[in-house]
Image 1: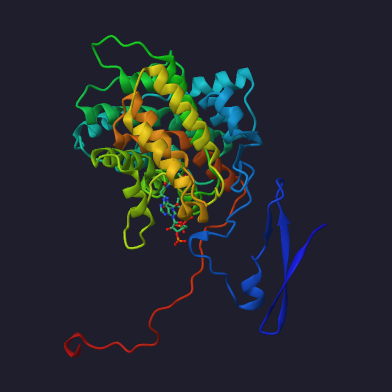
Image 2 (image 1 turned 120 degrees about the horizontal axis):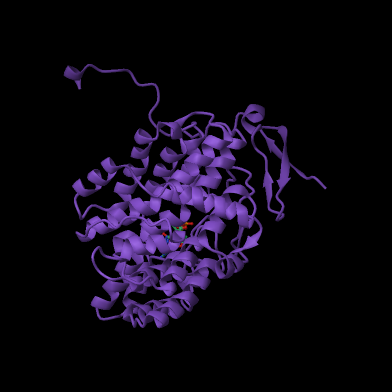
Length: 428
Ligand code: CMC
């Protein structure tokens, strides 16, 4: 039965219709509120505001549920591969064999990047943070492929842009990595599957024998799947709002990469490993760091802990924690920061401060330990998050444009000075 809420304001009754999603999430539609009452709503940080209706990802923060297009993250992480999940997110269904092959072929055909971009990469300071560079390079692709910026592009044109980005992001990321290490760039290989090619570009060295380790490829697939979408988070909302101005998919993704870089969002994976290393260097006193995290006069936060939506557990963190044990064992890595992380988690989960605030490890808490075990530099952890999130950003941008959503433009409540008279500079 459809419900409606009644709001009585300044003696006037306003009816607010309700909306219910397919997973029974409930919302009040306030889109006519200002016209009817002169009021807007105020919700800083959008803690209680639905920005859109979406059929891509569902998550229930209380129950720790995450579904892509109706499939559980547990099943997808266990049984699928990243490219299949990318197709699912973007096109709504798991691909048939023929669709998968066609998708894979069109992406591999886009692995190469313009020579000029390689030259640019080689000119960038080796110590530059890759997220800033990556945002720039993705935006720069539009100058080599202006067709990707066509407003109101056809479905076929959008499809071509999508495979371009999926093909080129791994190459750009790996080129940046090699450059940061002062090594020669390793060319992409179309004979390898998506993750194997990425692993090869990242970890093989020109002129040296290298065997692609299936444990590493499996870990990469799992990690990328777990990061592939997460409904209306900070970077995805950024992508949708940039795209709502009819900015191109590459420009919107570039903005998403910038948002993701922030340490409260994707940048947390780098921050977590740095925090764990700091704790180790400091002698491993986890209690001291927990106390700092609880101290309101200290800006330190327990990185990799807490989530805007998950208030019980983050299902991605659960899968990653298990995978972390398995991968480190398979690779024969014994990293002391793993036991520091586990100790920290155990203590935090038993601490009233964290219990009261429902703070649990999030996706970034254990992922960095895996990336480190794979041999990756900490600055590149968030690049991996971006690579994983690309299908989600793409699916969300496409959904928003196909629904012809209006330009995103929140209101505000002005709290500044009013009605002042201009005073000449000589009299101030
Ligand atoms: N360490 C210590 N205290 C915390 C933490 C933390 N990591 N996270 C939240 N709190 C406290 C916070 O101080 C506040 O306390 P009080 O009510 O006394 O003022 C309370 O818990 C609620 O926190 P909030 O900042 O209002 O919550 P939020 O929903 O605005 O922020 C968050 C969510 C993820 C930004 C935050 O938990 C945080 O900064 N965590 C650390 C960074 C991190 O791990 N980010 C990765 C998120 S998952 C990956 C992704 O999808 O981006």
